[in-house]
Length: 252
Image (cartoon, rainbow, N blue to C red):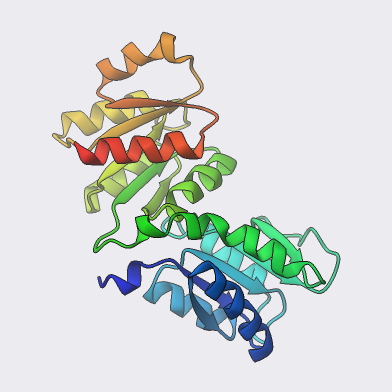
């Protein structure tokens, strides 16, 4: 993978050249690379070719509405962490879909300010993206809200994130590929974090695994380390703590 493919880039899904130029000006100010897809089908193809830092999409398209794109990404474990903002000319804040965008921006006089704030975390994480190979992280978490929050923190910071909903899915993923590190919830249905870490260590996998837990650190840290976890991150997760944990574990 080339360095260019790992630089922060914004995928804009929009057929209007005028809107494309306007978003291009915003990206120039933030020193971000802009890619444009005219419709949802083209956007999915572009994402398959190169993962964007974030997606901004106009709501109406000739082939599908942007909600089709939101649903396609949110239901893909390897793409679910990509932040998505929708631009719309209406006052709608709900779309009647099981999957939702991160932000809905009305195309009004203040839309550029809202877009810039949405893209600011990508600009701040620019240096993390500019590496030859992005570190791979598995996030094992059954709570959908936390999947989005923690996954997007990691994705925007320049990590290649794959989501598993429980320990069983995590083990299935590890049978077919390796990861540079893993964040794992403790309390999960089907197979919890305690059981999953036992299987991981018993199979000889030495990948760093950080426990995500709502348990008090003082009460659970000793148990977590004895189970085979390398470290512990408390919930609710904080961006700085999550990124620091990545940097620390990957440096060892």
